[in-house]
Image (cartoon, rainbow, N blue to C red; front, side):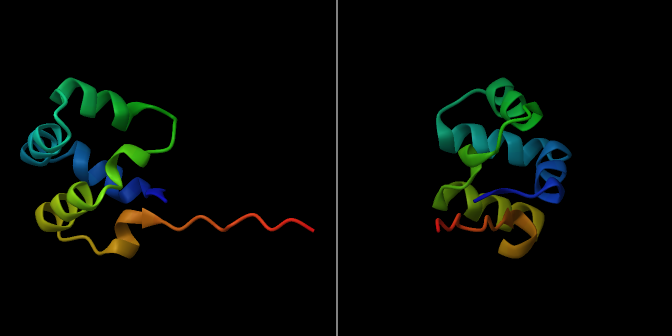
Length: 75
């Protein structure tokens, strides 16, 4: 699971949330911002504690925060 673009933007726009995420992850705010600005998938923000902070601070639902990836099926 990865963050939706809506969730990424909500985090980018919320300085207090970036600070909380940094504290929770034991990382700097600069690292949080770098992870948000990368083209890579945002798996860093999908831990239980990180998702709880995002929900609480943004009011977004899980469906608005997470993109559900389809499991690849092999034939």
